[in-house]
Amino acid sequence: MNFSELNIPKCKNFSGYKPCFSYEKCLENGCQHESDETKIGTKILIISLDALGNVLDNTPILYAIKRKFPVSTIFWITMPGADKILQNNPFIDKVFVWNDEQRMILRQIEFDYVMNADKSDYACAFANDVKAKNKLGFLLNGDGKIIPANESAMYSYILGNDDQKKFRENTRSGVDIIHEVFELEYKRDPYVFNLSDEEKEFIKSYKTEIAFDESKTYVGFNTGCSNLFPNKKMTIDQHVYLISELAKEKNLKIVLLGGKEDTERNQQILDKLDVKVKAKIISTPTTLGLRRGACFMDICDVVITGDSFGMHMAIGLKKYVIAWFGLSCAAEIELYGRGEKLVPVGLECSPCWKKVCPYNLECIQMIDLEKIIRLTKEFAAKKSKKLN
Image (tube, rainbow, N blue to C red; front, side, top):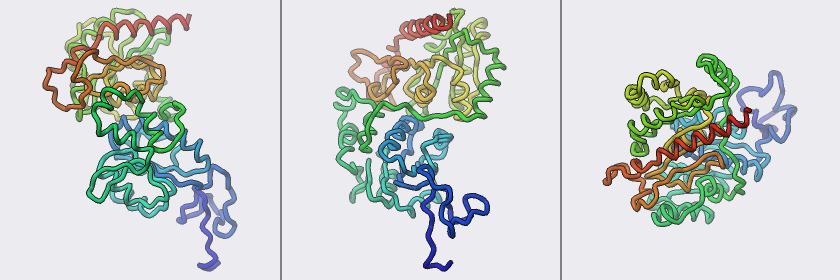
């Protein structure tokens, strides 16, 4: 074989570095394992970098992409750390992380589609750079301004630039809107978050460790949120009241959840609880990383949370979610019929997306704690009825 005879296989498994299977002669004989699953087909790059919750919230598009392009190769680039959300995802062929080396590689590939979900100048600048026949979502113009890349991105673009529409008029979820941006059919597909076999074994072992009782309803409290918007948090005293009231119910088990940024906060909550109540609480580790955090959340039936990554994780794990909203837009969250949103009524300043509140966090003070208690008890009663 000489250079002119070289025929590179259009196969996902072929790298050009070594045979995809030992002793296969891919260059001489062509691909011997060809199927729709191994064909490269339509090459698609998804750019979804920022905010862990947004990355998870964008995963439903993968179902629609595969419906539209059954024979395709899907790459996804995201920030370091967020790549863990995309592990064990059957739709994605390769996850790239946001660094110089990985961006350099992606710039050399000729894509059929680039789908940029992020309205950030660096994501849009990168989308400008990538070679693709079709670009959907958001780009930068010659003045360095973020612009829509296609007609179908206009609603999302205008929504971001019009507070009246975003805060008062929009009733569509973010999942619905991102499908429109990428010219995909929206069928209310769920998030894609899959636990590995090792993680399932870990959960099984942890349940044994805590003497897990299937007859009980496990109520998870996701106590924190990103430091970027700290005012999404319920107060320590609100948590203490809710936990103390729910702990009175014999059929409920309370589980404290959170990431490393919530370690101190969870301890503060425990310190303020009555000794007898504290003894009933399962306080899960907060420093073992995102995937282990998902394992601990998976033991729960109900998750009580603010609008945070923990809320999105609970949605991804198909838990019953009771979520409160203040500064963020409740309409943009899809609970898939598993849960309820608590939104302050008649509060002119909510939502606002401000990092500093000039009004003493009225939206947090207005959280209906009694409704949270009632909803939790009602869910537990339904579960008990099913078991009996």
